[in-house]
Length: 494
Length: 122
Image (cartoon, rainbow over all chains, first blue to last red; front, side, top):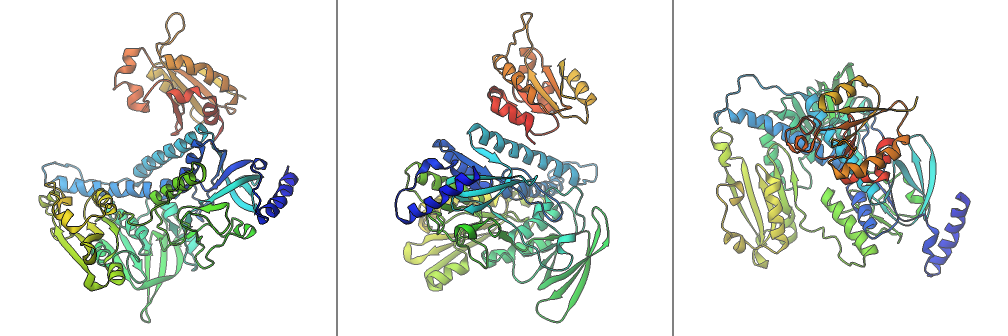
């Protein structure tokens, strides 16, 4: 059957080149989705609704430390879900402290068990992995735990963990392979450092941790690790949260610093050595200043690298089928219908060039793409005004333009920024900071003072931001905002 | 070695049996009690049981299949019964792989494909 597929590939090419409609019946599947994460699964399940024959290939190449996980992609296994749960664990620790001022009498010293937390979280993730398996099987989507790569215009080779290879053909493909953490490329990085891919299933408490990076991954992880009582240091090469509103990024950093997270600014690690083996062991990190001649050393139980993520697009045979990728970043450029330069090959999710790396974006893009392909719909994914939240100890929710991007696009004289500090009522009694929570909106003066940027720093920022995102999508103006009466007493009324 | 079946009734007997097989893959089907004629008060259990039994030949070697009657309807309806509290069961029939989050609940147990997947895949 391998030969048969090959023969069909060649006439296929000639027919398409001549502009004739290809014969659909010669393929094993209508659609093969490479990658079973947020985008891939959403697309596959949607296609099954239209009775298409769909296959999903999902495979996790183990990390240098040997970590691996089940079906569901980054978000479910090593991203949003465990991150938010560990963030919650840290918040609960804070709440326990606050509770004393509200009259709760904690007689014992409160301690945290990493193992108990991790076990519960992994158990929940396991139920999600299983849930996806059931959902796919129930909707007749074929799922294979195998590494997919293109070997021909309509042919994929799938290799499972035992090394067994199978070939499958499809009329169309969606690439949704996502990303993996980047390593530094210094001695000792892969041998001794961990990444977010390892952290959420780490079978021992990380102890004194150095987090390298200033991304939201770095700050969120540093934040909850410190909140759980660990000694945490963040090593930052230049600025915090590149791409985010810098005014807000600095406030987040300040808050973390005042709440026990150490920062080493303007340094990069140049080597990591093992001092002692163990779980955790002891590592020595040597770092170099980026601004002057200076070297420093430090010892940590764990070094967590969070310096960025790279798309999994270089080893899936895209060159064999002529799909263009950005050679420098690995990202795939697509048109506004998620189509690559090869008409029958599409892409969704974190691997897309110029699009936000968020689960809900991938899901929406995947679903709408499939509806356009098989249900005759025309709606395209709206990537504008997508709300996000960074779950640092002081949460940050945002929708729309950052202040600096608004100034750049509209000109400083054409925007008006309204801002305010606020003190959550719940923070008053336990005497928590009264000047840290903050909200600002950026308005376009020339367009009726339309709200083009929304930023809030405070508890439950995600919950607060979601509603405002809908309002902004409807074209909220400052006047409308002013005339909306607030709910009292909540943070969002500010 | 193939697989073997154990039939138990009630929570303590279930736990004791599961513990005695520690180290081997354990699958369990929880159903409502049967009357003297062998019919369960739980209609979905009546539908599911033959489907599950039909797939038992797919069980991995060395596994144990525990067929567990949970109790009468009144016992089951109590939101605090031991199966609900300790095993987090939400309905009968439930078919699960003990010690893992993998389970099929109610109508999911009617589907041979899903039962087979539970028995055969990691």
